[in-house]
Image (cartoon, rainbow, N blue to C red; front, side, top):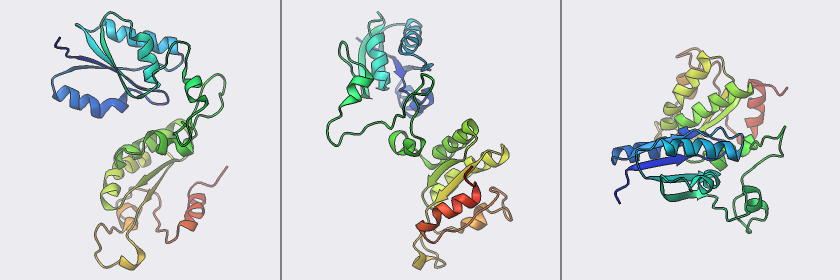
Length: 242
């Protein structure tokens, strides 16, 4: 059977935009791709949203789930338009199992999502561990936009870390957007070793000149930190703890 329809289901704590890279690859290969935008309020609601997407397919489809999305496709996989299920680093519960039961007793050394205790019936991730758990491999520009979005949503500073020269250039658009929208955001950028500075070292950039308000005006303030011990200091000067 030649199946050309693919339905992608995202996990919890994220939305369908996380499938962008996969969407581009599949479209390039000639597949019809549908990305389900789960409400993530309840499993039943997410299953219903997925089944609506399946009902709209022109024929049989491969149903793909990532992370919590695996639970969703397990429930929605009985839809008549489903030709097969694909689990990508996803939960694959058996009868009577749930995400809670599957992560209750992890194997030694197994990664565990940093889920905080429920608040008003909703689950949240520990923001300090979000990047390492969910966005460790995204590009610097994407990380900058995520930090900008976090700042808009919470009113607290979004934090972004970028590599040296190329990472700084990619992250610049996120910094500019944050400035224009008056969104609290802090960008940390790697620098060459101190003994290599001012010697035209590979990827050396003067970030105060690149981002400082006296030049491009891309940021309200730019400074160089010569020791990791001073990071909390600088963060406090930028956005004092309240």
